[in-house]
Amino acid sequence: MSEETPLRERSCYNGGAMDISIVIPVLNEEGNVGPLCEAAGAVMEKLGGTYEIILVDDGSTDGTWKEIERASEKNGNIRAIGFPTTFGQTSALAAGFHDAAGEVVVAMDGDLQNDPEDVPVLLEKLEEGFDVVSGWRKDRKDPYFTRTLPSSVANRIISWVTGVELHDYGCTLKAYRRDCVKEINLYGEMHRFIPAYAAWQGRRIAEVAVRHHPRRSGRSKYGVLRTFKVVLDVLSVKLRTHYSSKPLYFFGTAGIGSGLLGLAAGIAAILLKVFGLKTFVSTPLPLLSVFLILMGVQLIFMGLLAEMLQGTYQEMSKKAPYEITRRIG
Image (cartoon, rainbow, N blue to C red; front, side, top):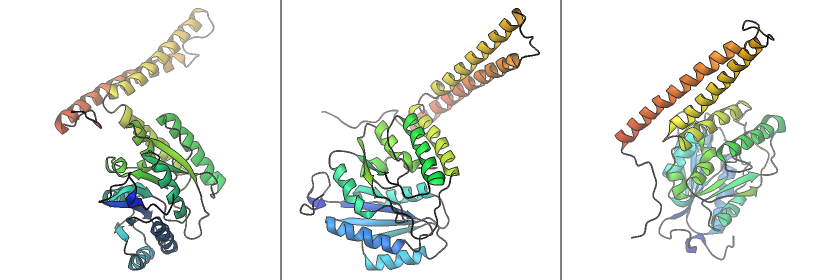
């Protein structure tokens, strides 16, 4: 992105509003907040235009807040939000997104592993007409077996389930057009699925390689167990987005599949009995058949119950089951 054309003069930004908001969640990053704010501020000053840096302290117990106060005294574009206790990265990002005034919102980690120098790379890609640009830590500097490998597995699962192919869903460094993050309610670990949400809404998604640095100060807040939480969250996202209006399709399909497997197990047990190969007592197939059929019936009834609840919610909320993005006349 060239420095000769400041952001406020570019057609894809609203000249009457803040150009860019950088949202940074932090948790016990006492040694990283100061250098990060200086680096991010220097990058944004080079770009020109108006900007703000929003630091969200997720209940830090060290001197992080004091460091944030010092940074805000040096740079008037720095704002901060403080939580009384730790609510998690998704909640911190949601609070920052809610307060962001920029036409473009950039999210990044507060541990200096993301490089502020990559922000212009994201913005340049965004100006090509994309709505979300996701960073890809192509040369990741984390321990392989405890961080990189589990993350790679999770990324493959998320891409398969959502149908949105990204190499690195877990990279916080992303650039969004304002309306992409203002319209999404975040919970759990849902911040990583914003590109999938946006793609399902017809937005254009891109991915660019970004730098990744080893952690210099503080301790990582992520572990192997986080991968399992992500898998559960992606199933929740799939259910809430693709089956929220017709939950019976999800539970009914699973129920019919279970019932058919149970029927097949029952037929197999009968054939074994007829041909004198196995008795009903010597094979688990009869029990398996009954179990799968009963489970299938339960799933179908769960789907019917969810369908009734969804209908009640739709009537009470008066929320339209569609979204209009364009009109003529």
